[in-house]
Length: 511
Image (cartoon, rainbow, N blue to C red; front, side, top):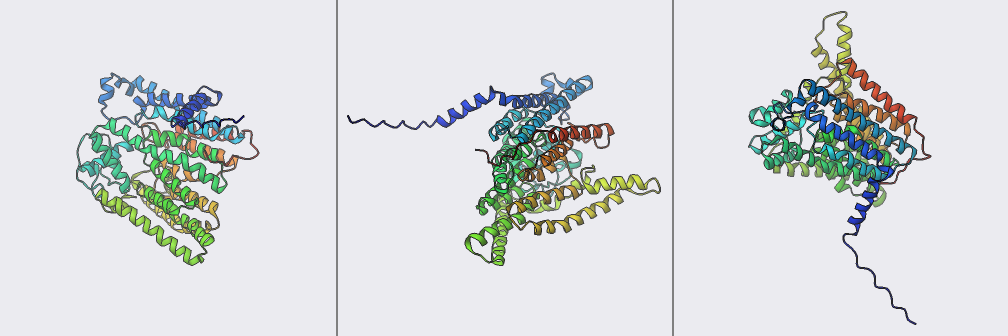
């Protein structure tokens, strides 16, 4: 008897989507989702508490219309602050719990990626928290929209409702961001006009591609350089410093680090034209990303030398020329689209020199020197600060070339070099803010493979996360706040340093 062959089932285009939803439903109702739901609760508390204790508007007609203005004052502000800080504590606890599971090897990359969505969802509806920068972004976008050059004038030259919420330190400062981000901000203000609430929500959505790129790229880079994919996701994506500060605070660092790490991933995977282009695009959001390019030259140069037989000097010259051409082309196109020049480069330090906190070595040193010297003589703090900041820039100028030269050996050395170079810059620039530390964090997370290193990075991230206040001010001159932040950091280190350890951390990238 001849059997009739079975007719293959027609492919179901909805199959992958249905399968993905089924997997998500199974995850959400299973034991693996405990940290996801716990962190989601924390994010929800932050969102609710942020209505009164966040970086709210000076005059908020939305809260007025909802009869919730009482949340911003007196007992209402106390209640809002308690809710918000409780939310931060809950999210940190959930994150550290996941960190223990990364270290003992019992959590998958899928769990970490889906958990990101759970934690992020409530924050998409939050007012800005821990920073007022989003108001500056909108005002700078409105400058370009209204025919002004944001690299020549500050928001104060374009009076409108957006100006009311811009921090005084930035109101008269020209934009220090690249043409790519200025175009994004312009587009947002073109779509929503001067509606601050809608503009904030839309700007936050504009940061999502950066987060998506980071989720995709960080595990791939980790797999290429001997890191751990779950550790990369834990430290670079789920880190409350990223979720709360970059997404909750609406910072363009989210776009920058996402594009930069994606560019590193493409370059390591032998697609350097795309990789360098993405890093150039990241630098067109925020200039710091350009630090990665000289290190990627080593990676690209090795590919030419090993696969095409280029002599070392010829490979280096070719790659350097091509990289420079790509950067020039990207900036030329974006500057032409925005109708601006390269004037933003002169504004890079203009705003930062006005910031005084202990987050960089030069400013911290100036504070300490001034404190000690004033016991013996009268000294002008700003004179000391000027000297220490000049010394800091000198340190950067001297050490960066050394880091670059030492990174030439292999791919891992190059990526480690980028992380150290970013950290050097953040530590020794005239001034920094907490979210600046996501620059080295995003890259360092991909090379980490030691549980001890994970614990140290988690402790540092925790301290930086909580040292600022939800309204955008910092607590570094309040001893109680500083000691509380140190206690949180110590707890984070202890919780992860004592975690059971797997024989080897997983380096497989997320599917």
